[in-house]
Every structure is written in C-alpha cells, then in structure tokens.
Amino acid sequence: IVEGDSAGGSAKQGRDRKFQAILPLKGKILNVEKARFDKMLASQEVVTLITALGTGIGVEEYNIDKLRYHRIIIMTDADVDGSHIRTLLLTFFYRQMPELIQRGHIYIAQPPLYKVKHGKSEQYLKDDLALTEYLIEIALTGAQVVNSNKEVFEDSTLKEFSSLYYQTQQVIDRLSRTMDADVLRVISEGVQIHLESEQAAKLSADNLIQALNIRLGDHSQNLEITPQLEERTERYRLLVSRRVHGNLKMTFINADFVNGSDYQSIQAFSLSAAGKVGPGSKVRRGDPEKSHKELAIVNFQEGINWLISEAERTVSRQRYKGLGEMNPSQLWETTMDTNTRTLLRVQIEDAIYADQTFMTLMGDDVEPRRAFIETNALIARNIDV
Image 1: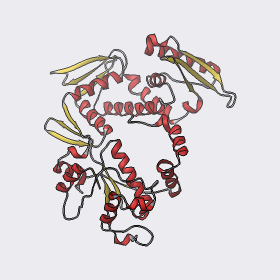
Image 2: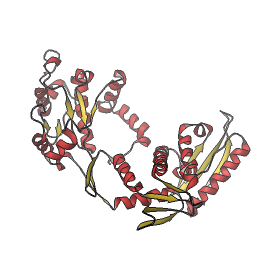
Image 3: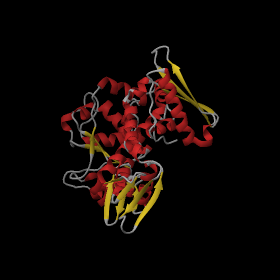
Image 4: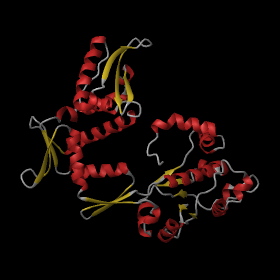
C-alpha cells in the first residue's frame, strides 16, 4: 500500500511482478474510528482496499481465509503526512480486520531517509541516527586525540569515547525537558554530586556553581544553588535556579537522580573521555608524519564536533522528502527487495491498552485526547507546527 500516485507508479515499475502487487492510495483514507459503517463503505479508498485484499467486510461478508496476500506492507513518506496516513490505515485494520494484525500479516516498510556518497562508495541510510553513526565512522578513521599529558587516543578507544559521548547526549536531551541542560552538561564534564550529608551537599553546590559560572559566563549572574533537606525523605537535594530570557528555571537534583541510571550514564562519560580530554588537548585527522589537519580543543565535545564537520566535507548526501523522489530501481533496491529491505511487523501485545489508545487518539471524544496531549507535550519530539 503506497502513499501517492507518483510513488505508486515507481513502485509498480520496480516491483517483482511474480509476487508483489502495488495499491497506490490517492489522498488520506477515512478515519474509521469516527465514521459510521455506511459512510466508511462510501469511501472510494476504503472500498478499493477491501476489494484488493479479497476478504470482504462486515459480520456476514468478512472471511479472513479469502485473503489474497500474506504480507500487507504499508509504505508511506517519512514525514507528518506519511505518519498520519499510516495511522489511519492501522486504525482501519485494527477496527475492521483485527485478525490481519493478530496473524502477523501487517507490516510497515522502512524506506531510507538519506542517500550518501563517500569517495566511490554509496549507501542508503534509514534515519538521522544512522546518518550520525555513518559520519562518526568516517570522522574517526585516521583520527587521534592527544591530551595535555601527551596520551594518544585513537581507534577503539576513540570509538568508545564517541559512543559514550553520544549516549550521554541522548540522556541529556531527554532529561532537558524537565531539567536544566547546562547543569547536566557540567556534570558530564566531571562535576560529581554527593548528597549524603549537609556538608557534602554544600560542597557539591560550590563545585557545581563554579563549573556553571565558567560555562555560562555573563549569563550566570542570576544563578543560585541551594542545598535543601527534603522533609518527606529526610535526604538532601540541590535546588538550581536561574532566569533564562526572564523566565525562572528550576532544577532539583536529589538522591533518586544521583542513584539512578541516567546519572550513572553521564558519570561514565565524565570518568572516561571528559576526564582525560581537557584544556591543552588537540585533535588531528590524517597521518601525523605527513599531511594532516590539527585543532587545539578544551574538551572532547569540541574534538568530535570538529572531526564530524571535517567528515561532512567529504560526504555528499541526498535527503528524500518522499517516496516519489526515488526512481523505480532505487525503490526496489532500498525498500522492496526481499534480500535487503527492512520491515516492521505490526503486533498487539496488550489488546486493552491498544483499544484505549485508538479510542483516545482517533475517536470523537476530544477531552481524553486533550488530556493526552497536555500530559505528553514535554516529551514530544520533531513536532511539525
């Protein structure tokens, strides 16, 4: 099931006619969660889909054993409209043909978002994460980091540092929805938090404010860090407050955070790369005995960012806005070839939760949907407004 006529045409030309059939969808399918049964059957897209599957629909007509295809693959663009169409199709299958999902017949295609070229090598990449990993691999080839003690980090050690760095950045990005990102960054750079006693909390506050003053510079004027004793737990915590663009920003650092996995992940980076690569370090790319580039750095982040920017100069990339931008051979090679494609099988592990989710997000009742949006607004990413 392919979104759009143009992509449908390319898919028809690129398919293996022995066992693959293409159904292009013109426009968006009806939201069957809201529509009456008779209105649903008046939708041309729905009727075409039912006819293609061959199962019929409704209590008297529906027969799963008449299904013509055992892999029904939803193939949409990697944008908001594509996500919407995919959601509408999943709603249709869940409400009208749930056995297709229960028997494992419904799949979601994973078309690439990028085509990259480095030298004579070309590669398709699924998403932004895959692109970052690809650039890191190129960036670290022939790279070295030398710290102020003349220790040289390269190859597997540099890959380990980079892996820890990006894991830490993912943790910071997630936590920054409710915590001050600059506080988390100075912790990742070596500031340790101890809250076992009032004295330990005060010392941690002093170390934290010193590091933040250096990081924030002139923007640290409104910064305050106060050790507090929580009455409920009788344990110490730190309250970090500062004004950002006139708004008061408060972050609590308590024992639950310090003893949790997120803090441990951040500390793992601070004890490795951040602790070994500081002021007086340098990063270089190329053979140090021959032609190479070199840059003085004060932390590992500067080094890896420079290496990636240098790698990007050697890589050309094409970003696919939609399936229609691919020609038939590209669609076959990346998304339809059974030897190389990636598919996600749609499964329902919790039927009650799935039912509630479809009702909340796709149903007529506005209040539960508003409550869901308000509850999850801070953790939403890549919002298209």
